[in-house]
Length: 147
Image (cartoon, rainbow, N blue to C red):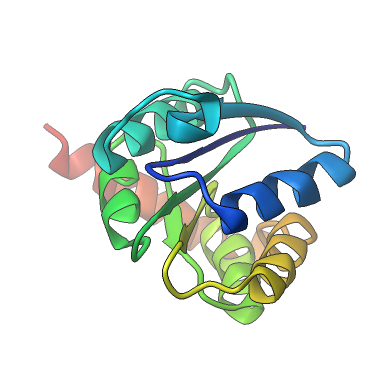
């Protein structure tokens, strides 16, 4: 599995999540300050989401102060279903019911221990077959309103 991960700031939380993912033997592509480049949150979201949409990476993880901005920006890229997760239950639901492919988190309000729970829930869950119709409806909405 290959994950695109980015943030507009490098800090203890981003370092912790990168270490967690590496321990899971997940291949990482880093963006923004995580890769030593200065990028705004909008640009980081675009970089990561584009990698996922183009299927260069299987999924993405993005951080910004609240997590809201990168979620909104990433969801502008066709094919992206970014979900802002503040707890493990939300992460599980986002994967199971929405087939979310980009996890976003708040740098401000996510503790390292909660991030661990979110990462574990996210990467141990997958879309449920009974939600396929709703997930397909979301894709149709995206196509309908992107014209």
